[in-house]
Amino acid sequence: MRIDNLSAGIVKRATLLADGRDIIYYDDPDTTLGAERAVDARTLDPRPATATMRQDVLTGDWITVAANRQNRVMMPSADADPLAPQTPTNPSEVPSRYDVAVFENRSPAFGPALAEAVGTAPAASDAPRGLDDLDALGLGRTRTSVGRCEVVCFSPAHSGSFGTQSVTRARTVIEAWADRTAALSQLPGIQQIFPFENRGEAIGVTLPHPHGQIYAYPYVTPRTAKLLDSIDRTAPDLFARVLEFEQASERVVFRGEHWTAFVPFAARWPLEVHLMPHRHVPDFAATTEAERDELAPLYLRLLRGVDALYDTPTPYIAAWHQAPVNVGRDTVRLHLQLTSPRRAADKLKFLAGSEAAMWAWAAEVTPEQGAARIRDAIASAEAAATASAPASAPAPAPASAPASAPTSEETPA
Image (tube, rainbow, N blue to C red; front, side, top):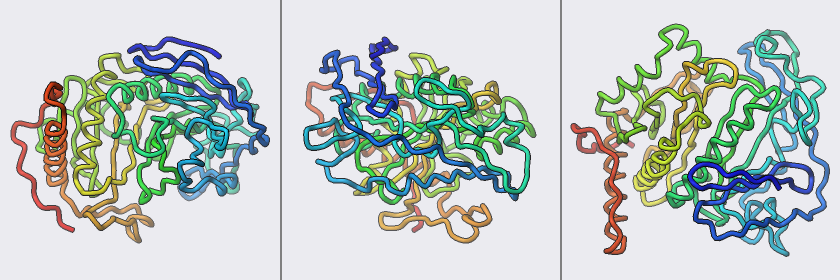
């Protein structure tokens, strides 16, 4: 086991699963766990062959065909949770007790093969030969779907989400994102790293365990490619301009010393919030310890406010956009895009003809209304938390809201 001391008192312990996949434990600074971790004694089938990518010549997009993902576990009971620590009756994916655990997905869309052999990862027979190779168009083009897909377990508990974690645990997960972003960026053939959390059955979640994922792509994703084109057509400091524009608006949800949360001017979804650092950083690996320290409580504040909008938890996709590994490092800024299809307590927005087929969006909620509702929900969640807290526990100092925050308006259903 390889052991490293990270920032904020977090300890990293890296080892292997029975079939050679990486597993990394990240211990909280106040962990109650010992230094040892159980060995994975399972007898596992060989890892599936790496998937193949096919190019859509009409758009240039690369589509991964990963048939091995058809047999994923669907909503298991607590005693069969594959992300819980192993027990004598549950041979799960995580051999030992843990605070935060990250491991290679058993049914990946990308990998295990890489552009070159590294550790237990084999070399692909037909890996992409750089960005120029991927940009070229042609009928019937294929490449091996090299890369890495990892699962990030936020907690050993069977249910919950990032927003249900403590500030200390949130900080540990953020450290894991930064550490994995740095490590995955060094793997041969990797072009972009994407940490994200899918939350709720309405999003398509198949496991109730509190977890997220990290994808390491062999290409620059279509959304980021479009973003790079917008930067080329405007200015290298586009993100700084966007942040300044949003900070001067009524769409600000809250502002801290290092981060601002806002509903974007042209939000697509009924619920959409961006969280952006005040200085340019391309990815989590480039953030400072102070930025990570502030992000932990601010991100929890946002997620708990989103959950306070309705009587039941809000489904969402929490997408952390990062600059590609080899291009756009000085122009693309790390930022969160949190979106939910929930447009009312009992209604979801479905992407039908115009949006799904033509990518032509129509929003039913104005961004200004959306920001006001989220600000009110955050205030409500914090008031409820203060009321239920022990009298001796001081309330945390909230990040500032915009001085001219409007009152909440009813969101049309």
